[in-house]
Length: 67
Image (cartoon, rainbow, N blue to C red):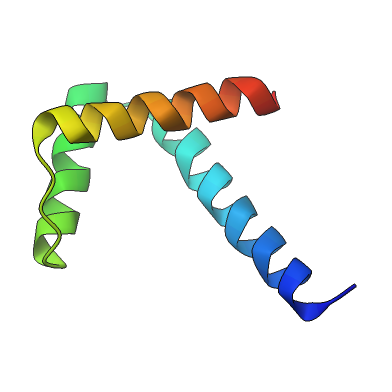
């Protein structure tokens, strides 16, 4: 396998794992989204609430397609 394929697989697996972890977390979705927004703000990334919900929906759809 090429190194780029391995790197992409690792990154994809990490993203999918994080998404599944967020979706099955014991906290409510609203609390989780607030925490994600806080982390993104600390890193200088600004997302509006509606954009965050679009991102969550997109991740959820992707996970449903994979499973």
